[in-house]
Length: 621
Image (cartoon, rainbow, N blue to C red):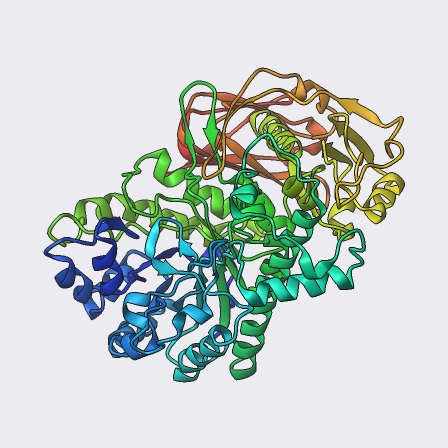
């Protein structure tokens, strides 16, 4: 059941992954933009299980999805729906659509599940007042605790039924969250951890767990986390959720080694994910075959000085060598994207080596009917996407030319607001100036040396919490190390200050002060002018004079020639230029757009780029 094709050969869509109970209970718009209180809900929901629905998806070229299977209502309730789920999965797989069974990790529904598990509260996370921890503002959803007896064992049974049925190509876990928990089991295990790790300046038996509101206020505030107990508590919770998914992986692969394991793990460096929601990307991602990343960062341009980008996720996925799906649309389907705002993100995923996604193409009109006009307008874009992915497969699968590295230190971005703000400001400059960069993701003593060696330049964006081992690796690296900000390596991975700065004498640059609008759900910065294009002019063999709303992926062949510029944009882009020295040019090029092809002619080092919307490929013949 392995997804053997390259990830860009798939187009992911929405497979009605919520049961009726969930839609009805939430009442308002939920996933897919469907209002839970609608009179027509049941009619639409049951149509979704039909052969006609599967045929519609196949005709649109949609070939992978996750469908509802287990939401946390308890198997006694959800097994009633399982025959319908299996029927839908069979209809899809008969038409070549890969199907992953949706499994909710972070929710239990006590209003239903306590009929089956009367002591359900004993499986749950507890807040600091001893009450069940609820899923955000959904007071009717409890969050399970993997440190308490019952939940993991129950999930073993759920996963066993799914995999042993043989009806699915894989499993997709949603909501990989681990909020602060104050249950007796977490308290006891954390106390033991402190004792084992030598916290001898306190008595671990009497440690006071960091209050939930204290932890939460550190999300996105101007705060630096130096409290050693809070730091260890974050890592304790990180190891807890990592242990749960390592167990699930072992369980699934022992039954079917080819079963695809996927999870919703936001590939976005955000402190709320690292500190409070506790979704440790660098720990969980290696346990997955496919990572879905739901962040809300649907690419868009405000027309003057700011772009919402999914490049953060694409770069993170590539840094970790992940098969990934940037799931960036509005999960309630409230926005209607067309033109470049629709096609741009699809091709950006294609060019970046991730899986393109259109999960709201099947969103119904009021009354439950299909929006056939929207489907017809999108179908040519999807067909073009698939055609180009096959036609230029060899070019697309060449490694990206990205000689500039941007260090992402998970320890720094977890513990320091200054560090994560510096990271995004530096990344904004790289994106706005079309500089060819890659993320170098590090944590504690972990670094991908091969990725680092692909860089000729490495920028440290105020990475102020680095381990001794990482400091030594970076000091001894042969490339050009550039310090952005004045606190790089000032502290170790536990935010303990060193006697002196470790990178004295290294090249330094100023961090452009792009205005931060939001670093929580949507990452949004307003661009200010900077000189980074000139600073790094000698690093790249390509220079683009193009709107900052566009993004370019550069491909070179073994001889060093530029064989492709793959440009995507979420909006209409005016004319621009690409400057490539003659020694790096191929003999002839062509422009490939959404609608056709035409010759592309260099005049010396300069290629005039036409206006376009959505995507433009400059391909060597």
